[in-house]
Length: 439
Image (cartoon, rainbow, N blue to C red; front, side, top):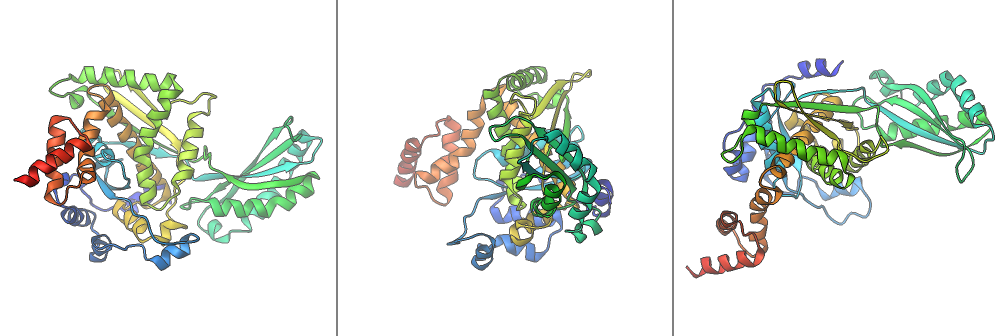
């Protein structure tokens, strides 16, 4: 089944545009999200009460468990991707991330939202070969044994084969001069379907190691996947007319010019690109965490991909179309899964996937990179005008109020005053709190 067919097969009617969502109470937001996504009463109860991850279950997930650590779980609204609406779960501690993604999705929604595509879910497993004097000869021997190697790899995972996946091919890379002598590295290229794929490809690499040694006469050392999933790419694009970016203080054209200048800075300077890409991952990582996927693998692959040309640069591209519209795009590795690991063991990861209603790992990857593109657009928009701190600190004000000791209704009152005066400091929050409690 193709990604498009799976989407059609699992289609449901969701409206991601929820009016006044940020001003609702936590339980009201939960009720709205559950209703919009068509989730069950059991799904509502999972989030309405604490302790969604039982200690016994946590103890089976990792070692030396003493408890669980919670992050805020928010929902980004307004997302339209390939004509379908999505509610986006985001597990993140940083203020402004969910709000920024939601606002940019709302702007993009007016011009059709985000368009996405992806390549097949091909992962690489690397088999390192040492102790050879003729590395090019070893390469040719391995390529000649390609059919035997692929067959042996596929014999290890009949379930994956039955689902249409499996080892597709091999590559052989030669490093003739290293501090440890010649090294040959064979890659297994494996279609892992809806899995992230680490366990699958690692097992296949270990399985074929004896064949590699027999064929070449060398010694196998490492047998491990690569997190640079450069054959498993997800892409998203968005087009925004100037009018949609206009504010009372800035024309749409001024906004576009500023955003293009900000992007160009990231494209040419690795110091800026690092922070630029961190902002992209502000959107991507929370979705990866919420769905129980490996955010460390995604981060590693993203930054390696950003440096694939020999210089670290932006993961996104922003351009001006012939119609004077702002066009943004992103392409990056996105090795996400719907099966295996925490995606199947963590109750809230399963909840998040039900909320999104994604049918395949490719669909999840495409929606996730669309969130990254939206987050990047929000950062560029802010940087091109008033700067990043004004909006960020206004949303950070609630944290400051809590640190100052505010409770209950005091939190919103103190935060509102801090934001109104653009003076978001703990000592100022304490002054306001003391004044309020004298009344």
